[in-house]
Length: 305
Length: 324
Image (cartoon, rainbow over all chains, first blue to last red; front, side, top):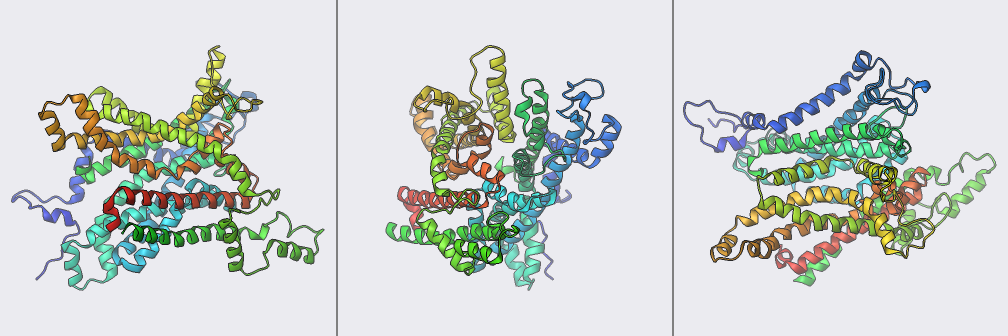
């Protein structure tokens, strides 16, 4: 009887030593990732931001004892470390730290939603285009070419203008361009996996197209999706912050790291910290996403290091 | 063979042009209901008047006719009119294009000129402290939001330097207000901060790329041969290795050509730089859909054209591509 080919095609190629338990591709990658201290640190920073985003109302209640909307006109531009305001207050006397905590909801929420949508759509299109080839491939990829030919920032502004976005539509707007490059990447990967022996064998066994794509192709391109997902998260956070900064994304009174920097030129002279803090949180989260993405790439594919 | 390739490549561009213009046109159609703000809701206008306005603007005709008319205009360099003041979008574009090109070409040039020496240094001193510092700078530079970096540089070099009584840099604009822009030094001083910010991302990517490309080339046989025959290290590195290491960089820089028009938008806004990006942003804030669409279409067509030219250039330079 022909035993089914394991999902982890790459591992099957390497002869496994007798007496040593076989390790899957994912186990090996995890072990490589675990040894990458910088990568693990970046991952933890990312987890920290996610936790902050989820628990920001609780954190605000516990530590800053105020709401992001609470205006205190008697206490505007309080300096950092002043009574009750660890990071100071803004032009309306709102607590800066509280607003940063809630800003994490915007950046992380939109970031992850956008990455999820772009990965889902991009992977589907890439898998279908790469698997079927021919006319379907040609049409889908030419469509991707067109989307990517329009300068992304112009397209974002145009769509933001038309749809007056809330958090969810803003995530979809950003994802509506991002899926294109993911589709290209996945398609390229599929083209190389498609011709491998295990694919031919599975097809010979009479597997349906859906099974071939879902059970055999997808697991083999999954590492590309995970790596690119992390790197793309950093890009989304930057794009989203820029749109908020321009006043076309999430607008006040909802605090976001981007819109907290709008008009910050006005406060330069006396309250430069208002310009510094949101930038640092954007920088750190993007840095963490990029470094974690790089670490994942090294772990999945040590040759690229 | 070359001629055949060129014809095929040019023909392949046509569907892309149609697709890109169709996408932007359909986006415009979504907004057509409010083509002139308030027309449909204006109680002073009778239904006949509204019909007349729509007829005047061609909105009563079938969609494909509207598209073809619009496409015909674009072929003649007409990117429509502003729906706020009726001015020609193409005129705005050509007013603003020089400032944008001044900024973006400077940034790309700065990026190339600085990233190559940085990348080479990193490769030659692989594993040293300098290498680690350069790597850290590159990883960090890639994560800094451009608008924030711009704000911070303004804070330091314009605001603080002024406060400390030091010579300070202007925080925005192309030239000192009131001058005609004939003073080259004045223009350069204004260009310094925005161009630095814009080149930062390029620096991060290209210096890393040069470093790995250089490392790869340095490990090749012909470099070992050059060293073995007693050639000085300097000649090996700069005459033999560097040349081959920067060839892939040319492709990478070529990929940034679309950014010549659109890449500087956020930086232009931060530094009040009167370019295409700032124009699009200003019009977007005023909800001037037709102008925003005209600029977007223009930029997209430039990208398509740029890709075409780059491909043709590669084909002329590298015979292998023609036969692929």
